[in-house]
Image (cartoon, rainbow, N blue to C red; front, side, top):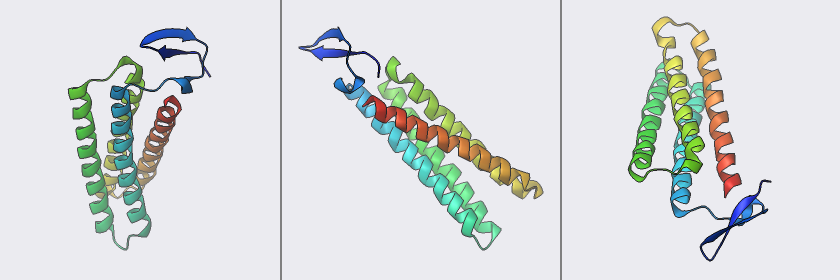
Length: 151
């Protein structure tokens, strides 16, 4: 663990403490909560699309699920992004915000790649989309772990 600043009577005192000793500011707590909430939306949409792909009896239901997942995740990200823009974020959480932005980009790319299958029936789009979705979910999971480690 790394040294941290301990807060006593409002005065920062440099001491070698584990980071568990300092609570996040209310702004960081709100930001972390918003980020985890967005990642839940991303995860739910990815899981729903994957379950539909695995158990669908026809391709139309798969395409519908992919379109819906792409749309719902996009709306969730837009709400999260708008909240960040309105409230602002501290320098200490820019890495988390950058990861959320990248996870969104990867999710949208994955859904778009899956949907390209209907353009040319090339199954490589399914493989490529799966790889991108896996990277997206891995990044989201790693970011949530990072948030939890900072609490």
